[in-house]
Image (cartoon, rainbow, N blue to C red; front, side, top):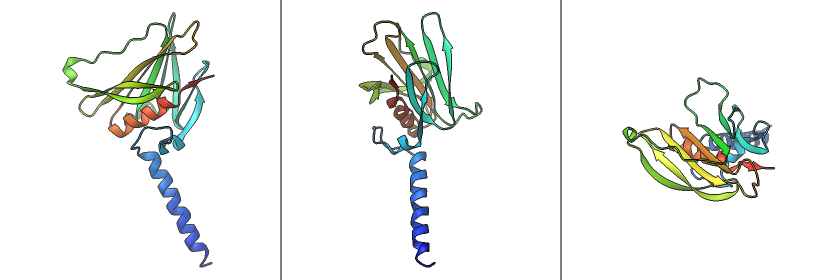
Amino acid sequence: MNKLKPALLLLGLLCIALFSNCKRNTQVSLADPYMKCLIKKRVGDSKFHISLPNNYIVKVSRGPDFDVYYFGPADTTDKTHFHGGFYLGNAGALFTMDEADSCKTSEVEGVLLSEKMNWEFNDCKSKFFIQGIVNIKNAKHFPRQIHAFGSAKSKDEAKNLLTVFSTLYSD
Protein backbone atom coordinates (compact mmCIF):
# COMPACT_ATOMS: atom_id res chain seq x y z
CA MET A 1 0.00 0.00 0.00
CA ASN A 2 2.89 2.38 0.79
CA LYS A 3 4.26 1.91 -2.75
CA LEU A 4 0.90 2.98 -4.20
CA LYS A 5 0.85 6.37 -2.45
CA PRO A 6 3.80 7.91 -4.41
CA ALA A 7 2.30 6.67 -7.67
CA LEU A 8 -1.08 8.22 -6.83
CA LEU A 9 0.60 11.45 -5.79
CA LEU A 10 2.54 11.57 -9.07
CA LEU A 11 -0.64 10.87 -11.03
CA GLY A 12 -2.45 13.66 -9.17
CA LEU A 13 0.37 16.15 -9.85
CA LEU A 14 0.37 15.17 -13.53
CA CYS A 15 -3.40 15.80 -13.75
CA ILE A 16 -3.00 19.20 -12.10
CA ALA A 17 -0.20 20.13 -14.53
CA LEU A 18 -2.27 19.10 -17.55
CA PHE A 19 -5.33 20.98 -16.31
CA SER A 20 -3.35 24.15 -15.61
CA ASN A 21 -1.91 24.05 -19.15
CA CYS A 22 -5.45 24.15 -20.50
CA LYS A 23 -6.20 27.32 -18.55
CA ARG A 24 -3.19 29.37 -19.55
CA ASN A 25 -1.30 29.89 -22.74
CA THR A 26 2.07 31.54 -23.21
CA GLN A 27 2.89 30.82 -26.85
CA VAL A 28 0.99 30.35 -30.06
CA SER A 29 2.42 27.43 -32.00
CA LEU A 30 1.27 24.08 -33.26
CA ALA A 31 3.02 22.54 -30.23
CA ASP A 32 0.99 24.75 -27.88
CA PRO A 33 -0.23 22.88 -24.77
CA TYR A 34 -3.63 24.57 -25.19
CA MET A 35 -4.12 22.41 -28.30
CA LYS A 36 -4.61 19.40 -26.00
CA CYS A 37 -7.74 21.09 -24.62
CA LEU A 38 -9.43 21.42 -28.03
CA ILE A 39 -11.78 19.12 -29.90
CA LYS A 40 -11.95 18.96 -33.70
CA LYS A 41 -15.38 19.91 -35.04
CA ARG A 42 -16.82 20.23 -38.54
CA VAL A 43 -17.91 23.79 -39.28
CA GLY A 44 -21.60 23.44 -40.13
CA ASP A 45 -22.07 21.74 -43.49
CA SER A 46 -18.93 23.34 -44.93
CA LYS A 47 -15.71 21.56 -45.90
CA PHE A 48 -13.93 23.25 -42.98
CA HIS A 49 -12.92 21.86 -39.59
CA ILE A 50 -11.74 23.74 -36.51
CA SER A 51 -10.66 22.66 -33.05
CA LEU A 52 -12.57 24.37 -30.25
CA PRO A 53 -13.00 23.99 -26.49
CA ASN A 54 -15.49 21.25 -25.64
CA ASN A 55 -18.19 23.68 -24.46
CA TYR A 56 -18.13 25.78 -27.67
CA ILE A 57 -20.66 25.75 -30.49
CA VAL A 58 -20.61 27.03 -34.08
CA LYS A 59 -23.48 28.97 -35.69
CA VAL A 60 -23.84 29.97 -39.35
CA SER A 61 -25.27 33.07 -40.96
CA ARG A 62 -25.77 32.74 -44.71
CA GLY A 63 -25.69 35.66 -47.10
CA PRO A 64 -26.47 35.86 -50.81
CA ASP A 65 -22.87 35.07 -51.82
CA PHE A 66 -21.07 34.43 -48.54
CA ASP A 67 -21.30 32.53 -45.25
CA VAL A 68 -20.23 33.71 -41.80
CA TYR A 69 -19.52 31.19 -39.05
CA TYR A 70 -19.47 32.30 -35.42
CA PHE A 71 -18.16 30.31 -32.47
CA GLY A 72 -18.29 30.83 -28.74
CA PRO A 73 -19.30 29.18 -25.47
CA ALA A 74 -22.57 27.25 -25.63
CA ASP A 75 -23.57 29.19 -22.52
CA THR A 76 -24.47 32.52 -24.13
CA THR A 77 -24.19 34.30 -20.77
CA ASP A 78 -20.46 33.45 -20.66
CA LYS A 79 -18.78 36.75 -21.51
CA THR A 80 -15.39 35.86 -20.02
CA HIS A 81 -14.07 33.61 -22.77
CA PHE A 82 -13.11 34.41 -26.34
CA HIS A 83 -15.57 34.54 -29.22
CA GLY A 84 -14.72 34.39 -32.88
CA GLY A 85 -15.80 33.69 -36.38
CA PHE A 86 -14.89 33.77 -40.00
CA TYR A 87 -16.33 35.03 -43.25
CA LEU A 88 -16.14 32.82 -46.34
CA GLY A 89 -16.68 34.67 -49.58
CA ASN A 90 -15.05 36.55 -52.40
CA ALA A 91 -14.75 40.11 -51.07
CA GLY A 92 -13.46 40.00 -47.50
CA ALA A 93 -12.39 43.22 -45.81
CA LEU A 94 -10.89 44.00 -42.42
CA PHE A 95 -13.09 45.74 -39.88
CA THR A 96 -12.07 49.27 -38.97
CA MET A 97 -11.68 50.16 -35.32
CA ASP A 98 -13.60 53.14 -33.97
CA GLU A 99 -11.20 56.00 -33.21
CA ALA A 100 -13.00 56.58 -29.90
CA ASP A 101 -11.83 53.12 -28.76
CA SER A 102 -8.21 54.41 -28.65
CA CYS A 103 -6.90 50.97 -29.52
CA LYS A 104 -3.24 50.13 -29.91
CA THR A 105 -2.82 48.19 -33.14
CA SER A 106 0.05 45.83 -33.86
CA GLU A 107 0.76 42.75 -35.95
CA VAL A 108 1.17 39.24 -34.57
CA GLU A 109 2.53 36.31 -36.55
CA GLY A 110 0.23 33.34 -36.81
CA VAL A 111 -1.32 30.70 -39.04
CA LEU A 112 -4.64 30.47 -40.88
CA LEU A 113 -5.50 27.60 -43.22
CA SER A 114 -1.92 26.37 -42.81
CA GLU A 115 -0.62 29.68 -44.20
CA LYS A 116 1.74 31.86 -42.19
CA MET A 117 0.27 35.32 -41.89
CA ASN A 118 0.26 38.50 -39.85
CA TRP A 119 -2.83 39.04 -37.74
CA GLU A 120 -3.98 42.54 -36.89
CA PHE A 121 -4.01 42.68 -33.08
CA ASN A 122 -5.95 45.49 -31.38
CA ASP A 123 -5.52 46.18 -27.66
CA CYS A 124 -8.48 48.35 -26.64
CA LYS A 125 -8.21 48.89 -22.88
CA SER A 126 -8.77 45.34 -21.60
CA LYS A 127 -10.59 44.21 -24.76
CA PHE A 128 -8.60 42.48 -27.45
CA PHE A 129 -9.60 42.07 -31.10
CA ILE A 130 -7.79 40.04 -33.75
CA GLN A 131 -8.47 39.68 -37.44
CA GLY A 132 -6.83 38.58 -40.64
CA ILE A 133 -7.59 37.66 -44.25
CA VAL A 134 -6.08 34.97 -46.45
CA ASN A 135 -6.90 33.80 -49.94
CA ILE A 136 -7.99 30.18 -50.10
CA LYS A 137 -5.57 28.17 -52.22
CA ASN A 138 -7.00 26.39 -55.25
CA ALA A 139 -10.40 28.07 -54.82
CA LYS A 140 -11.85 28.05 -58.33
CA HIS A 141 -15.28 29.12 -57.21
CA PHE A 142 -16.89 30.12 -53.90
CA PRO A 143 -15.30 30.93 -51.49
CA ARG A 144 -12.00 32.56 -52.41
CA GLN A 145 -11.19 34.34 -49.15
CA ILE A 146 -11.50 33.84 -45.46
CA HIS A 147 -11.66 36.75 -43.03
CA ALA A 148 -11.15 35.43 -39.50
CA PHE A 149 -11.92 37.61 -36.48
CA GLY A 150 -12.41 37.36 -32.75
CA SER A 151 -12.46 39.10 -29.40
CA ALA A 152 -11.16 38.29 -25.94
CA LYS A 153 -11.02 39.88 -22.48
CA SER A 154 -7.33 39.10 -21.84
CA LYS A 155 -4.09 38.65 -23.76
CA ASP A 156 -3.99 34.98 -22.75
CA GLU A 157 -7.49 34.41 -24.14
CA ALA A 158 -6.48 36.26 -27.36
CA LYS A 159 -3.50 33.90 -27.68
CA ASN A 160 -5.84 30.94 -27.18
CA LEU A 161 -8.04 32.33 -29.94
CA LEU A 162 -5.04 32.48 -32.28
CA THR A 163 -4.31 28.86 -31.37
CA VAL A 164 -7.88 27.91 -32.28
CA PHE A 165 -7.60 29.69 -35.66
CA SER A 166 -4.33 27.83 -36.34
CA THR A 167 -6.35 24.58 -36.36
CA LEU A 168 -8.73 25.63 -39.14
CA TYR A 169 -8.39 23.48 -42.24
CA SER A 170 -10.37 22.39 -45.28
CA ASP A 171 -11.08 18.87 -46.63
